[in-house]
Amino acid sequence: MSAPEVDAEVNAMEKRAPIRILSDSFAARIAAGEVIERPASVVKELVENALDAGATRVDVEVSDGGRSGIAVIDNGHGIGAGEIELAFSRFATSKITDDSDLAGISTLGFRGEALPSIASVSIVEIVSRSSGEESGTRLLFEYGEIRVREGVGVPVGTTVRVRELFSNVPARRRFLSSAGGELTRVNSVVASYALARPDVALKLTADGAVRFATSGSGAVRDAVTAVYGAEAGKSMIDLPETPPGSLQGGGSAISASGVVSAPSFSRGNRNYITLSVNGRWIRSRRISFAVEQAFHGFLPERRFPMAVVEITAPPGDMDVNVHPTKAEVKFLREQAVFGAVQKAVRSALLEHAPVAPARRFDSPRPAVGPVSQTSGAAGGLNPLWPDPLAGSPLAAAGAGDGRPGPVAPPEAGPGPAPGEQAAGRETLTPRRALPVLRLLGQAHETYLIAEGPDGIYLIDQHAAHERVLFEEISARYADSSSESQQLLVPDTVELQPSQEEALEQHSDELAALGFLIEPFGPHTVVLRAVPRVLKDRSPGESLAAILDAAAEEDGVAGWQEKMLATLACHASVTAGRKMETDEARELLRQLELTRLPHTCPHGRPTMIHMSEGSLEREFKRR
Ligand code: ADP
Ligand code: MG
Image 1 (tube, rainbow, N blue to C red):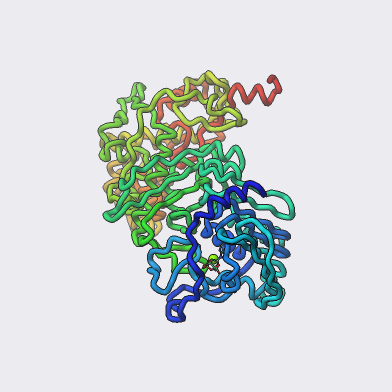
Image 2 (cartoon, rainbow, N blue to C red):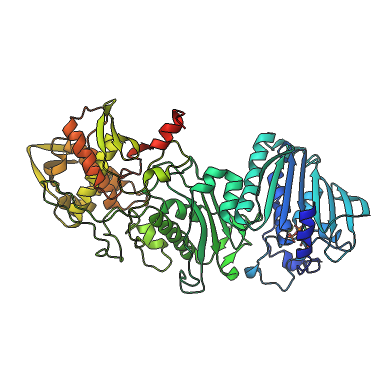
């Protein structure tokens, strides 16, 4: 315990206000309520108290997931011998007073409820020594009644031990999950604070085994490594530094910093997105969604990023007094926060996976428009080019400065070879422009096998073709040069009501894409011409699919992007079809020329890369 003692000396400087009981009328304005539901809620309250006390080191220990015991040990400024009992009275707090402005709270706690609530449903021992005192005090409470009070020699700081939780409230005890279930929740609380406060060394020990321990270095990446492992830590990319005041929505600055996982490292659920505001860990579906949305097009469907996003906002800009557990906050300018987060994540991703330089398809077909990086509307990309956020209603709504649109990409350099990025991993999808690939063959009539300068590539023929067609169709659509093909035998298509509605709404865009559609009978249309890429496919089905895509308002991707992606999907070579060598070679060549060769328009990977290094490792050649 020597390190905490040294830290405690530093904290001795911490300013400590006296604990006082709030007046009834003031307490009535606080969103009070039962905050202790389970071991994880005890842990949350005690960790918050430790952080509010300026601790630089907080150890959390649980046994049986907290069902049989919880201890939180901190090196904060402690509680004075004269106040320690008072801390266990309802509405006793040192953090606000009757004159405080509830809109500007900067401490994690403020209601003076946690300690009395915990003490009333368990056996609690508290040992604390305040920074100004020679020795500490130990109190023991049994279900709210004080049993022991004595002086003890301890370092500055506070230790709270809780056992027999809810043993006097059997109904609530029955609602607890198994030890494993409770431990998962405890883990999530401690991990969230470890990530939200990388400047504090947090440690979680369960049944004697350390689950994780952060160093308190202040670097989010270090905290991610400690909590989620080395591979996760390495995969993180930094959100760009935002100059203060640059992301403001009229008032004072709101900014976002932190780290997000590179697209090559994704998760199966959204539990790995951690948000904090001014050092307070919060939950917000909407802000989490801003993170997920920024990843749109970078991750396959149903894959989620890992992220630790720290939002800085003026304290007066949010209301933490909306929910007893304080896990949810209300932002005065939620749109500005949404926009700041989304922009920061998006620009980090674009910077990490820079857009390949402008290229043309130099095939015999008329060249499609080059992707100019300077001619786009928002100082960057062509708005119809697959920056999926550009023009989407949410992007527009979310942008803090009301200016939607992609962040201008940096100059796309040659970038490291895929093999360099693959260091230490078995397989991954490389991130930048593709090298020239040499076709080796086809497997399962679904995958192309190719060799590049560094290793072997397995390419999903359908996904790859989708990508190629998507870019081609998008470019033509953008400069109004879509090609249409007359059908020898017009196709009649019966439409569902939602499809009819979508058709009515989007007939101009469909015509621009190359569809010639005429009314035929009730709920039926006749297709006379279709986009040329659809030539020998079943055009009626494709139209129906496009109309379905238009009808489903998920608000994530713009309708035009969905229309183009659906068309590309229907026009692409399917899996399970044998490809002739020439045809497969041509597909590889065209894929090399695409702007985002590594994913299909729906975000699924088009290829898997096995670097030479990883092959050598697999075969134990080194
Ligand atoms: P709140 O955190 O809302 O003020 P609590 O019941 O959690 O209410 O704590 C009551 C008071 O006890 C706090 O205001 C603080 O002064 C003191 N306190 C609680 N835990 C600690 C701790 N770990 N270190 C120092 N002081 C603490
Ligand atoms: Mg508290």
